[in-house]
Length: 251
Image (cartoon, rainbow, N blue to C red; front, side, top):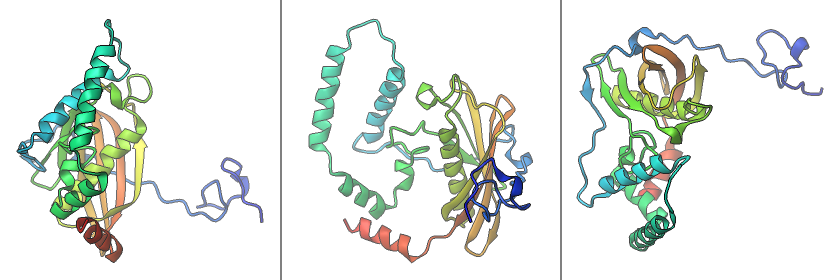
């Protein structure tokens, strides 16, 4: 039998997705947005990191400034001298830096995931970073304004960045609820454009645990408008992941 291509599925039985015949369609998630409303707040800050002794977080703050200023940069000056100075700084950092393998080993030996996270990590130049608070019912809430470096369509956050925000807020909500795992699926509904250069509110909470399986849901709002919702299913990791962590931590 020849597989049918997506969009041709007139003969596909009910409950099957257009595409490969026989693939089951996962039911669309029913996200309860009430607990995820952006007006809820007043929780306790979580995942906060004090300044480090070496000054890495302060250094990354300046990298974020450069990242924001140079994305689609328009300058009325010769950038050659500035580029030369940055190249010199980069060369000095490269000479002083440990290898990526060594940095990875140190991160896992200390369990310092938060500092390296691409959404909340103070040592990750990719991160905005988002600062979350946790409400009494376990919902996480964070406010952030994303710059042009996160733009996809004009004036809108890239859809992949929206998914990244959800993956992290749901994962951290699971962690703080006491049952956490690795992402198996992340089902995102893009309800309306998520804007850049405007404050947005990211929320997430754990909704159900069944053995090793964990479900959580989240939402993104801008000025009270619902931009996106998501449901994720996570599974507590087995021995392979734990063995990888032990191996990396050992260098």
